[in-house]
Length: 122
Image (cartoon, rainbow, N blue to C red; front, side, top):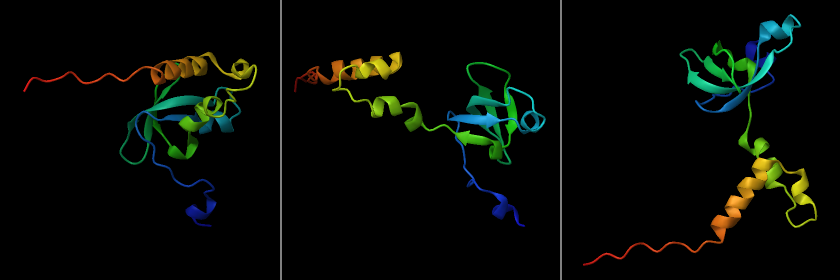
């Protein structure tokens, strides 16, 4: 069976700064705990591997195989904000503090009058 037929997940190219879920294959297959961590891509290496920074802190992971990485899309992290029923009673009860702070900031910014540019003397 060829390699491409064995792959269920299409190859993804990750970029520096993206958040990913990384599974250490050796720890996973030997039954050790702590095999899956959230990381930030620190560097794209020659040959298709990646250097990762575990979050919130931890030892760097060098030359991570992208077959054991999955992108953590921003849409998933922001879903509670994007789908919040803001007009319902108690809607904010299910939102995180960060989501409420962000919405409050957006509301304050949206209600400000735009600044006019300073007039120039001709």
